[in-house]
Structure formats: structure tokens, C-alpha cells
Amino acid sequence: MIEPKRFVRDAKCYVPPMEGRRGKIRLDFNENTWGPSPKVMERLRTLSSEIISTYPEYQKAYDLFSEKFGIDRSRMLVTNGSDEAIRLTYNAYISPGDKVVIPVPTFAIFGLEAELFGANAVEVPYNKDLSFPEDEVIEASEGARMTIVVTPNNPTGTSASLDAIESIAQRSEVVFVDEAYHEFKGISALPLIEDYDNIIVTRTFSKAYGLAGLRVGLVFANEGIIDTLRKVVSPYSVNSIAIECAMAAMQDQGYMRSCVERIIQSRERLASGLRSLGFKVFDSDANFIICDLGKEHKRVVELLKGEKILIRDRSGDRLLENCIRLSAGTMEETEKLLEALQRNYGDRG
Image 1 (spheres, rainbow, N blue to C red):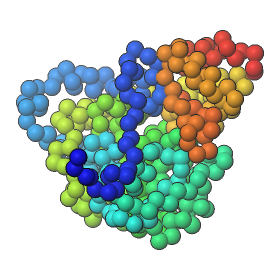
Image 2: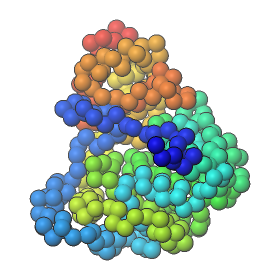
Image 3: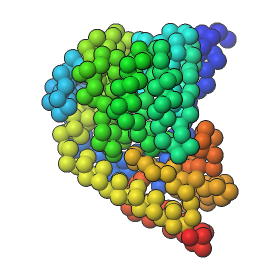
Image 4: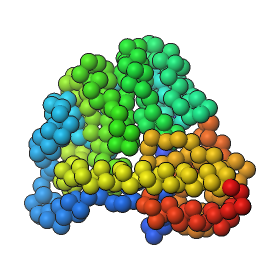
């Protein structure tokens, strides 16, 4: 066997359980179970053979995104999901031994990329109530090569303040702000890139826009950072079909906002229903919740599995012992989950 690079050899492999999900109630990966805008489906039906047989063109997409976000196209980069944006940033800025501050628990890819690039990952635990550990992260970011801020954070569902992000930017060489769940909170660090040349903000079409299967993300930063990321991005990394659908989704803001409204309603119904059954639920700014099942953890996980309701068991994460993460699906999906639990735990409330 050919020996790989040391950091690759020693790194863990991220393998999400993506098989066997069809035909089930999928509340495990924070997808928009309402689906994409009808305009996206219409665009798919009208795609020409030329779009499929030729390499992608991004000019129209950049013009549209620039108009919608009010940011010059020189300050943005379209990526193959925000996962690619994370990899590009590590590739461009992180060398072996560099200090990378990662508040945990968070999206696993940040830690795995740190391993792959040989970084010195400094983990800062969230507070016990799962709120962002502002003071601790600010202190840890002093002299860091990069600090990660996911807001709202996955899996905690909690957000960092803009003041905290600014304080971090004054101490850390690079600040990576992942806003995959921005639409559910509404507060963004995007305006900060005007004043800070070291802040990178990412967005995705996978959550609120319902395009998880197409893999489209956006990076926003000053021109210098974007020019640097362009040096390490693969040409045509976002395929033609994906970019056409992303444009169609972006042009239907009304549909996206209605989805967000309904998802938030479903999230609140899910939270109140679980609390009425005696379970602890943490407040969330995202399209999912964290529920502490206590001693009933294993039983509930198996019960929902038997009901073909997929959830994410996060009990192995720091601070999340006996916890599961549940996406807010349609109201019908939420009621089915609550009914399944009511049959077994109705006497707990």
C-alpha cells in the first residue's frame, strides 16, 4: 500500500449515514423537507441539452447574487456547498502547527479539516446551557491563525453576537463565520466584511432553500481573500444544473421566507410537544432542536427507528450526553413524531 501523507493517514473519516433514508420521515440532517421552490422544479424541466453538455457559466449567477446581497461580485465565490468553502479556506490559510480555535460541539468538518492540515486545534466548549462561550473564545482567539464561529451553531442551535465576532476579528488572523442557518435567525456578520479584511462569511442553499442534493454554497470576504481562494478552487466545481437551480431559488425569496416561517412554527410545536412529555429541550435559532432524553435516551432512539423516523443521536458529543437532534420538518411530520412518543410517554407530562 502506498503511504499517504501523515496528516491524512492519521485523520478520521467523516462518513454520514446517508443510505436507506428514502421513504422515511427524515428529521436527521436539517434538510428543508418542504422541498425547493416550484421555480426550481420548473427550471429543471426547461433545461436545454446545451446547459448539460457544456461547461458551467457563472456570470449570470454572480450578477444575480451581487444584486440580491448588495455585495460586489469581486467579494464572493460560488462553491460546491459550504463544505468546499471550509476546505478551500484551510487549504489557503492553514499550515501544520497553526492554531485554529474551534468552539465545540460544532459541525464535525471543522475539526477533521484541522487534522488533515496538521493544525493545532484548540477546542473551546460551549456553556452548559449551550450558549456561545463568548469570553472564552475571545480569549482563546488571541494570536490564533483562524477562529471558527458557526452561527447559529450546529448542533447547539445557538448564536454568537456580532460584538463577539468583532472582538474575535481583532485578535485572530482569520475568522471563519459559517452562516448555514442564517435565514432562521436573521442576524448576519455579512456587513462586517466592509470593516474587517480578515472575516470570511459562508452561506448555503442546502437548508432554507431546499437544495441540499445540489451542493451550492457562497463565500463572502474582501477581494484579497476571494482572490486567494480562487487560486485553490477547482475550475467548474459547481455544476451547471446546480447553478441554474440556485439562481431560480434565489429569485423566489417569497417561497423561501414562507418555508422559514413554517419551519419555525414546526420547530416551536416540536419543542412544546417534547416539553409536555417531560423532556428537556434547548432553545434554538435554527431549523432543529436539541432534546435531552435523560435515562430514556436509548429507548427513544430505538422507538423512533422502529417508527421509521430518522433523528440524529448526538449523545457522543461534548455536553450532549443523552441528547438527540431533531430537524423541524413539515407540521405533519412533527405531529407523527409527537404521536409516536405520546403513545409511549403520554403519562410523563
